[in-house]
Length: 565
Image 1: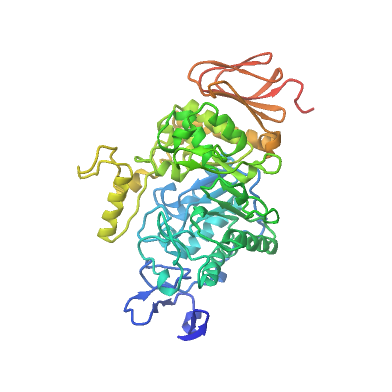
Image 2 (image 1 turned 90 degrees about the vertical axis):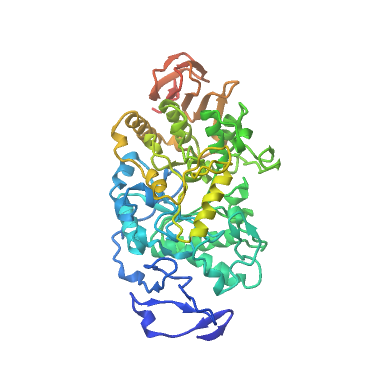
């Protein structure tokens, strides 16, 4: 190859133009043949040669698709490898009608870039441009997107730019991609050091490629707080500008959702106002406040959310840690959201996510800790809030299957290291009988751990799963029928709560959501006489401004005199 300058080397090869041609790189005196860091196909896995792939050869059927904007939408987080037993894009297509009937608007796929082995969460990807072949490769992803768009579903994709997986990470052999400090998962991306111009283009080019070439409607950016970037224009700000330009060219909305641990409103503030211009960001504080209130758990980071005012305040203000002290971090954390200038649509609210379930020792869902009626109360608080709601697959029917951490690394030493590390994380007993006194952690390398995490699609037809699914469907349908429930304006949103924080009333225009998280009956005080009850879980009774609620129940109702004419 001939050096072109700027770190680039060039070779013209006619066969490299032909789709289906396999190729690899030999670097200097290294005898190993490496795949292409920008490979679009890796049919032999991340250690094998790359294959030339032609995007133009696929015939799209979504020509009439005009996109799906994030504000007002309900999201559904989905892991391709465990959504069905087959674990493929094509098998997932067979379950899309369930999502349509549920009423969700957008599917958020967990990472599908190439990683080692057949099964894994996807966050150990090493070839960011290639689609994981066991899922169905690039054509499989395109068929999935086509099928979603045909049903009116938008598609978001989780992408990981803060680290590489531990197996097959050849990218650093090609340039100064990782010369910064350390993250919790390994070396951090070189975003501001020598040679970082091309590193940033590698990331931005990857993001634009997913949106343009795979017709995706947006990206979820994993752990952006781990991106070390001291430039005046940071990577997220640069990316938001590039995506905005692409959106204008494609004439359809494109969304960028950041996962950030910073609790910083600037993440979603417009670039013109000094923000990074993300469309939305996850709010783990909302999850933690809900989880602590529903389950009573007070260990780890849930300890900060045990206060009675934690749930109502976090529902009202997005972040519990908005500059206040965090005992888990040992310092003050976050910044306040101004309800006068910030939209609730910029923040995702959720009861469960892959992280909050999968990072528990047993991968147990919240439905394993709370009764179905209380789970439905949590769902009502999420779906009647001003935030962008997101469900984690199976949540809508209180799936009994866990969702555990699993991987399939082939190197025995790496596999054993992951096993031991997972056990140490929980101070846990190890499956061979050694170790500490903590809970036993399923072996992440055992195929049975992945298999146990696959959704059981027979459950939605049986009780109590069927009634929970009905509640989720009814809540989403009511949210769509009554725009007040999706109103994202925080300056019009009010939460009133009992002294113990377990009886709440959410004000949504003329509507009220009254929710009793206690196991015993309670009375909710309304600001106006109760009118028609639109949806309820449990037998509620109104007496003027008092609403009598059974234990673990909720009701969405109009206040008398405020119903639209």
